[in-house]
Every structure is written in structure tokens, then in C-alpha cells.
Length: 119
Image (cartoon, rainbow, N blue to C red; front, top):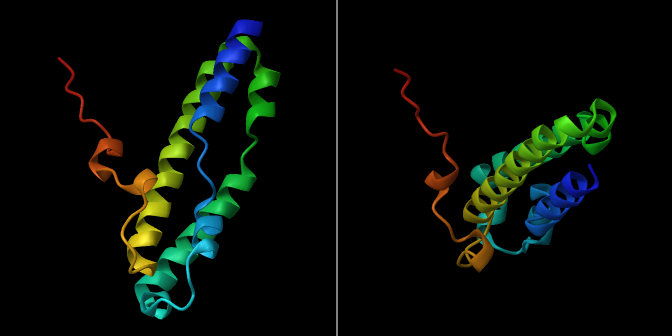
């Protein structure tokens, strides 16, 4: 059980991405794109995501369910990391004239749900 906890925690910490709302606060307010309606919508989406993220139980809930739920909690955390990256990328594109930073320069289709075909 200790190994599962260590693996899950190290996997979660390896790819930590800051909150999209925090990332938006770090962008320049002097940029001409900052006051655009698209940027305002991106900032609202980021703050809504931050509020939703605070509502769910998180790691403590997985610990209460036992060692078998750690994989499920790790998968949820991975999905949250992907959503944070997508929202931060969208916010940068909508609110900044600067080129994308290296950590946000990726193809968003890599995080798209995969279509599976069942027999």
C-alpha cells in the first residue's frame, strides 16, 4: 500500500500545473487583448473551474476508500492537470499577444477524448 501511495503522489506532483485563474493573473493587463470580450470569457471560465475544483473531495476522499481507489484518484488528478493546461493555454491565446510559453505550446488534440470502437 505504501508503494501505491508513493507512486500516486509522485505522479501527481510531477506534472503540477498552476491554476488557470492564477496564470491569468500573471498575464499583463496592459496587453491590448486583455480587455477583449474573449479574454473576459476565458477569465470567467478559469474562475469557474477554480471554484469547481475546490468543491470536490480530492485526495482525502481516496484515502478513505482504501488503497484500491488510489488509481482512480490518480486518474482524476491527471484529468485535472490536463484541464488546467488546456484552460491556461486558451487564456494565453485569448488574453496575451505574446507567443505561447514552452509549457503551453502543445497540440490540444492530444487531450481530446479518444473514440473507442466496441465489437
